[in-house]
Length: 387
Image 1 (cartoon, rainbow, N blue to C red):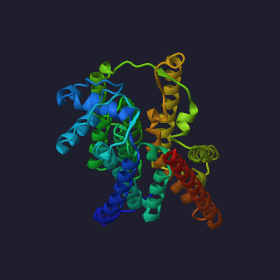
Image 2: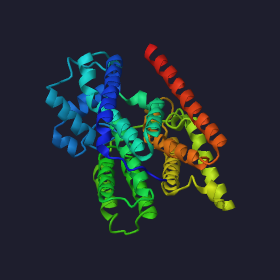
Image 3: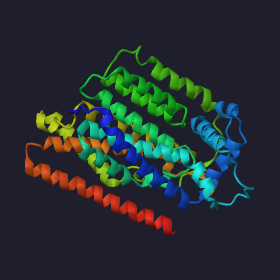
């Protein structure tokens, strides 16, 4: 996977302009979506009523004891001098423009910054058309719009997974990763373990694959593994016990990885496997280092998502007891799917670059799939806003 070397300052001005545009979009979403039950509960019970020490120690009244989001959110509301207005009588939704703007500020920053990083990474590696394609894939993702403006840890989780993914692609590529890449991976894995319960799994899987693919010096990977695991051992015993019920199953995964993206993954893996079996170098081309190991990464994460479904199925509460398991519990698959779709699409085009007719057909198919998904997502968004 050949990457272009372009000076990063060239991306600052366009990246800033796109960030402001995305942030404005998120601000608009924040204003038209009322606060809902979970956001209000998090704000009142786990931020306003908790001290920084309580949050840092994981003494929270929800299933996620990891403190990073709650610490930042408390700092934001303290800086703004904000407290939830009036009393909450457990209304399911509340429309309060000031609260919606302040409480969703940090998630909006995280989601907007995620897409700018995605755009600039692929634009720097392959040129602006690929960067814009990656941004288009992100904007065509239903879960991006569903959790762009929500005052809970989801946007932070999305951001850290995007950063982990692009660093993974960079580290597993043909160029020797720099010291900054290693430090970045160590930092993002520690932050994942501080953000969500499942973050430590992402850190362990990512660290193992990079160790296997890039550098098998176990001493280099000792801290990136020990620190997230140590954080997990500290926080996870304080995880509040709640009952869950599993109403839907595979549709929860499909909400994060739509069928057309899953088809791209399967075709990519099938072509690579066929090329290896037939020893055809041109077919094996898509499974270059970065693509091959990222395919393994997302495949393992999909298997773990299926394992999570199995656990929820076994532990599902009877009848209508407990919280319904929703697609947001599998949100990590959305940013992984966005990066994978972009990487695999680039490799498809590289595969057929010497066959102009096949290259054009591949371009049309990939572009058509993106447009169809974007139109469906917009239609679903309009329906949700009008409902």
